[in-house]
Image: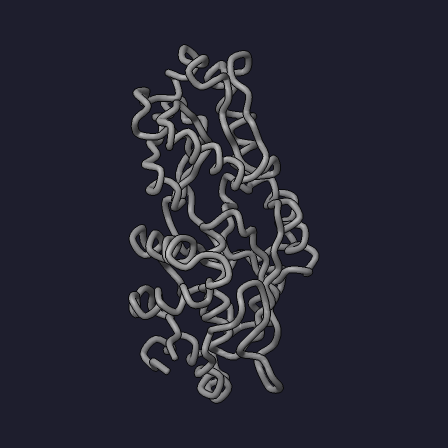
Length: 305
């Protein structure tokens, strides 16, 4: 094990357990299971995530890898909407949510469950909700949409109905720019939105979508964020790891490791691209292995074999 990277963890004790468990391989099958488990380990942690939200997908498997290497058993729990995930976190059915937007995008969930959820720290600054078009579309501002509704078929393609991005678009952006009568927000899923985007991009057809940063699709489809002079999509926010109430007390080694994870733009982009595009479904642990080899100093508490 790379001892330099474990200084912060060892400082809180359990040195023997960590030293023995630090040689776990991190190569379990995507979607669940553990390579760390066994008698005498540090416990089982259930990690909830939404596979279609790939910022969280990539950090979920990074966290699985790191927690298993210090001796935890990690169970991966897939959900499809943010609401049930927050409810599960509040009720203790899920121990960690690895990519929360609690400051703005998920504020309503935090207001509802704040006494039952523990903030384990932010790991990325500058996350942003956006309204975007491919770079070949010759408009630059949300202000331009109303006069060009016909070009877009009167549709803004969104993601899941329960997403904070959907709420922000429907309740803030659309009324702020007077788009109620000229545009319909089409919601279904992130995958459906990307299918529409892929089809439009191939035909160089005008399309407007809800998006966010960091998100790998921004680069793949050369998306251009429309200027938001009214600030209706909100300010930039940080991404956080959230735990069920009492998490840090029950899993102190995990909480200490999580607190030390910090990613910059380049590191986060490369993690998401490696997990989602270079490897893809079924090979997420292998993707994390490669990313860790290529970014051995990504953050101070990184755990290596």
